[in-house]
Amino acid sequence: MDMKPRKIAKLVVFILLCEFAGIVGSFFTTPSIGTWYATLQKPWFTPPNWLFGPVWITLYFLMGVSLYFVWEKGLKKKNVKMSLYIFGMQLALNALWSILFFGLQSPLYGFVEIVALWIVIAVIIFKFYKVSKKAAILLMPYIAWVTIATALNYYVLILNP
Image (tube, rainbow, N blue to C red):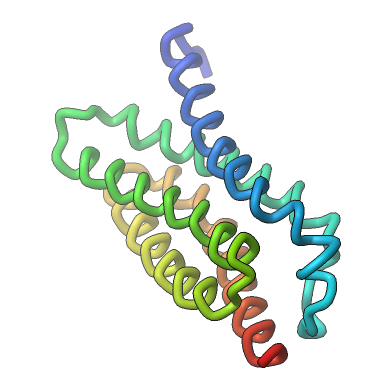
């Protein structure tokens, strides 16, 4: 794939933008992992703590590439603009979950928010599919992981009254 420097720079910016959402979330997540989160009852399917970092870094990378594929279709197109706005909403909701669940230590607020996040991810996959099938496919691991995270959040909520 032959890319011009401007396009490469845009791709890098989109990837960094998405990774930045993860960095924001990590400010709230990291301090709670060894303290509050460690004390919670968790379901049997809880992934090991060491897995979350690499998975999220990869997912943010895929989000950035996906965002690039949609942007590349042209900002003058109404469906591209709308898709980018919804993607921004999704990215903000993504960071907000860490603030609610870990920062406020609220599985209830986290659960309500992650359900909204899942819905917006589903919408953005649908919207991206209309613009770029590659972009939509790159978000499939993301919705799969957030599905697991939603179930995990739910069980943390009910196991820790």
